[in-house]
Amino acid sequence: MPPPKNNRIRRHNIVRHVPGVKGLAKNANSVEESWNLFFPDSILEQIVTYTNIYLDRIRPKFDRSRDARPTSLTEIKALIGLLYLAGVHQSSHVNIKDLWAMDGTSIEFFRLSMGMNRFYLLIQAIRFDDITTRAIRQSVDNLAPIQSFSEDFVRRCQDCYELNNYVTIDEMLESFRGCCRFRQYIPNKPAKYGLKIIALVDSNTYYSYNLEIYAGKQPNGPYHVNNSACSVVERLIRPISGSGRNITCDNWFSSIPLAEDLLNNHNLTMVGTLRKNKREIPPIFVQKLKERPNESSIFGFKKNMTLVSYKPKANKIVLVISTMHNDDSIDTDCARSKPEMIKFYNSTKGGVDTVDQMKGKYSVSRNSRRWPLTIFFSVLNIAGINSQIIYASSTNAKIVRREYLKCLSKALIYKYMLEREPVQKTSNSQIFWVRS
Image 1 (cartoon, rainbow, N blue to C red):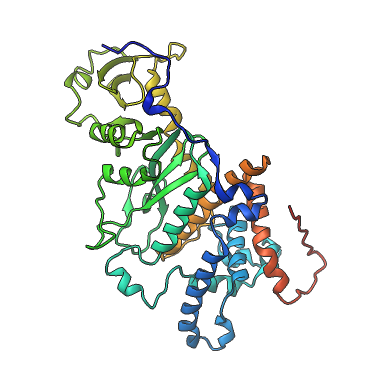
Image 2 (image 1 turned 45 degrees about the vertical axis):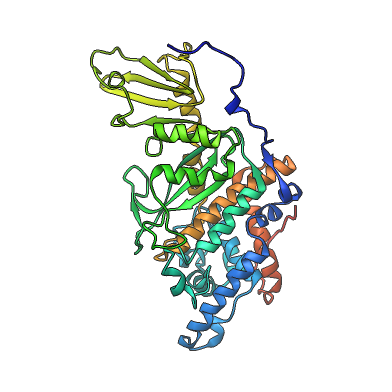
């Protein structure tokens, strides 16, 4: 029998943090400043240093040493700007030669910004760790080529923004078919094969707050962790532990022990679907399916926990567990008489999937056999989304994502173009810069 209905917010659902921009992010008043919150010059300088170490190693293979000359901060920014620009034109999978074609079919901005051979070399040479010490670090960490870089990015995501009340945990799959010991196969994802990233995302604004790259079974050492679903969730929610927020997740993560642990030890509620084979589920919730009428619901109540079994159509049931809801409310306005728990789950479950769609729309990703580069492309895509959220919150500016990324790419390329030797003018080439 359900407890008596109470319209007051329950104690463990009271959020005492004001959502939105925080810290240094409040001072970001331009597109470039918003993006620099996630990629400050100090981080890009490290990439320059590591890339130059690799360029020094491969330079003897070139007939002319100037073809593998050292890179610089402005050049790396320009490289990233061109990647964003290719994403804006949805050309991430277009052959590089087609982007620099001289037959009038290409986007002239690419040729005016950087030479094709230089762009191709930098994409091949860019590194995110010191290759001279990588072997030592790889003995204890499968993610050694990208670990420090990804950790710094996640930390900056958390320093710039305060989440809303409802967050989502789910998997992203970055398409990758090269050699990698922790490549995953997930049949229900568009890419099927790739690198798995588990993300904690704001369900309202789609701000990516915490990320964990799945690295398979790590060697014994500081990076050896338990990869079970409960352990992954507990690591992801550490920055928001005790905040009173609600976590929405699907049946790969959800379980009754996890819901109890989040509520009792972290003051977080959880709403998630359950698989029918969980032994904690009473048999009545999954048996006699044919005898139950369609669009019917069975509720079960436990202290601070509610379970619903909903039959939307013949031969199918949906199980949802919640430590946020405590009654048997059903939306009578809905044609299919859905319980309020399921409506809430449907409204918040798509946070990570929406971020995946946004990343794919204007993706910077390019085909690569190097898995660290695939992770880097994913981080750039997420930074493009997060920085626009920061920019919109700080300035109240309304700008569509395509225009935002176009402005960002121009801002990143501008200084490099000033440093380059003057480009010969052609009759039909002019560049107009709009400085915000």
